[in-house]
Length: 352
Length: 169
Image 1 (cartoon, chains in turn green, orange):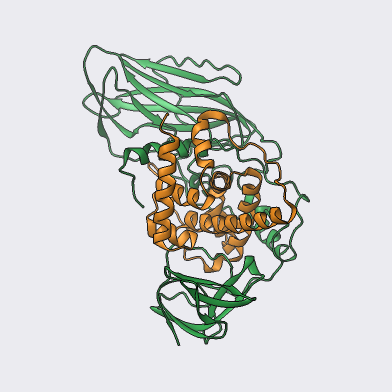
Image 2 (cartoon, rainbow over the protein chains, first blue to last red; image 1 turned 180 degrees about the vertical axis):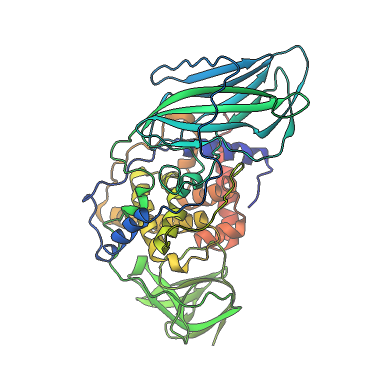
């Protein structure tokens, strides 16, 4: 992974990411909309079982309601559909929690931001705090009784802020995996905040001190309504109701190759199927394992008159049945497309 | 993730491969749909392909190397996308009309969306994988199943187009 250096790339990255984030991901097809391939029928019960059995307990670090001791008067100001915010003040420090909307759906990535500002006379204020230093928690007021977060075990560190330099922190999940929805592993794996339907209280807590930690506290909260997205089975149901496409070819999956070695070369016979995914070519080794080769530059595995061939610069250098050795390795993160075997990245090719 | 401690890692009940699969892939669904929408400029097709990609991923789960599930899902989805594009092109070649597409984004950054639409989908995919996701040229080449030199060429052309198209912004 690399970070862009060119300012144009940085701008482009941010704009594309913003555009992408605005793509509305609609609900999954309702039952019966898609024809289910025959070989997908075994998948559905397996995945339903996955959700039913998916609750495993990793003991909870902190899941519990936070102590309700606000030192500054929190002033929630919700209005239906519009943004919502609340603030709490203690001396020159103001903690504000805000969300651009008070109503979200179960599919939305909910946006919540906490801002700690300083409006005193000094050019710069210095505080000590732990937990980033703002810790968030969630309490389900209606539609359930889930409680999440508030936990932190980070060291107390120094933060500086000024009249024009507030600390801004987006919502961050804290706490431990509960095993049961909504706060299961999938919830934590999701980088976005998505909540089940109901009314939720979101709290932001700042425990801080001047010169030392945890002498002072600021707490504020807002309430959000989360509505069921139309036709949505919820995030965890994506895999329990496996989405299928009617255009999916109906074929049995190839038995999984038993090897997972990082071999330096693969020798096999060139094979292919022009009907499979618009044409797939692979090498079949002596053990019967198929290898989906990512060929070096200038090589192309294709079909001529329905026969698998290997072409270099337009010239056929091997045809189906030819024995070929490729040298390279198994690339990380490369997915099988044809689903016939193991993906292998070739650096060089030897045609026998 | 900051602030989380897993104290007890003992599962209460036996987990299955399906459990692992569900846990691993579910968080990436929306992101894959968004990515495919941007690449294909077709939201409906993106949703179908994302679903198909998940089904294929499940079939191949025992062959997944376990290193980067997001990259793996995106690889499957993007390769399906290009195959779907070829299918669609053949369909249009036979029947000669373009199916109606629903708009997939609002006009928040219309000039960018228009500029992206001016790119070939493969170029668009390569550009996004490198510029947005930060994959290296070689990694993009692996994901799209093309040579690294081809990726470099695609990205170069894509950037040149976008620089020109977005000059007035």
